[in-house]
Length: 140
Image (tube, rainbow, N blue to C red; front, side, top):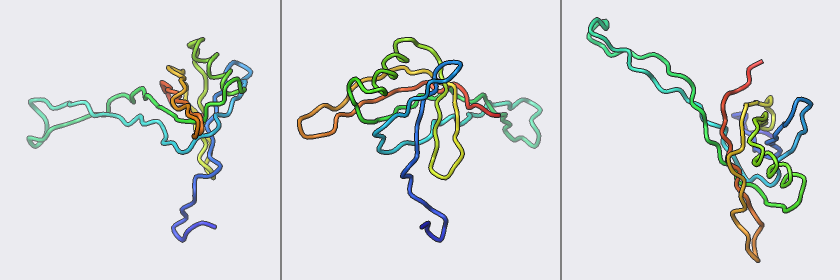
């Protein structure tokens, strides 16, 4: 049940990579939490000697390439481990699909800069970090 404001938990949200023309889809499992890639635009100063009313002017800059890091379970030799290792080694771009529960999937063109185990201990869950370079949001 949702709160009176409509707030819901993120349980069931997903992150997937889709590689190739006939996409091979790999779900990234064991994610604790994530934020969406931030591609907030900066402003470009367009102030000139004739700017109206002695006021600075600005125009929108291009969207930035985002670096997006994701912590998740490390499961050696799993389908996810094999897929992430292969995509990192290839350097190829793929579709990064992020779906918050109850929302439509959001897709980006991305490539994987790094995939590395980050936490291997006798008393904890083994973790890894995948670092993506997010180039552009796909708009239908």
